[in-house]
Length: 280
View 1 (cartoon, rainbow, N blue to C red):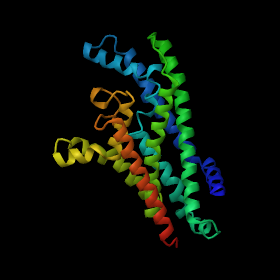
View 2 (cartoon, rainbow, N blue to C red):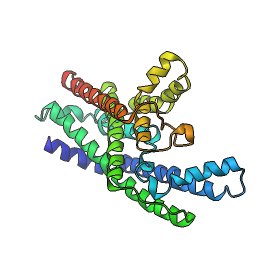
View 3 (cartoon, one colour):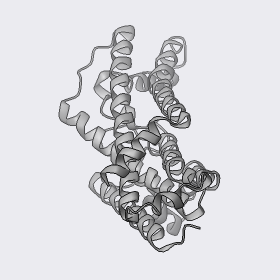
View 4 (cartoon, rainbow, N blue to C red):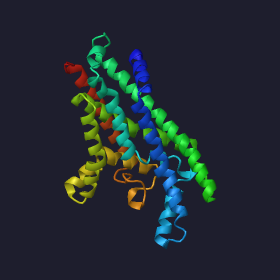
């Protein structure tokens, strides 16, 4: 596994698509988490009372007190879609390059190869989240100084809880991309299906939440569980003007358990597919 991990890290580090996706992740996180709320707040001085209150609520999420949740608020939907992209690119490309057969024929067990890929992706996601939290800390300090709204920084435990929750959500989405890439042996279709689910199907299920069956199903979808975990860390839910996808459908511990089940199912299914299928 160690050699597979090293090879995967080397491959991911040299891929321009990975660099581009990381850049998009960080830019979107900063823009929607800090830049957009700040300028909305600045431009609302002459707005109606309701709009002004919404702008103030938005900029409060851009202050240091919300550092534990704002960098991961996009993971239930937008950043989650990017995590699917990472998983599909890291594994599906092997089929397009026709290197999967070569790798598996060199001797390492298939389980070790998959374990190395998954471990490399977890390290990549952890690095992105750490970088995201670091840039968010700088941005929140700038917003605090520009708005002159004093606030307290969160505790180290709260930040670590946010980081761990974000890694769980990102790993769940990424493992879904890995599974789709192995099932479909490519990148285009897995990425397309993953984006359709994360950005379209999840939203459609939310609109049908008033229907009993759909309402129950919607609470336990990957995106809903991810949004509930973020909300459990005191992030503002979408219903109160927060980030799309953040909800209070499930308690925090239940949401974390649901995400762990999804992660385990995706990983086990991936291992079974790779071990049992012919690579030709």
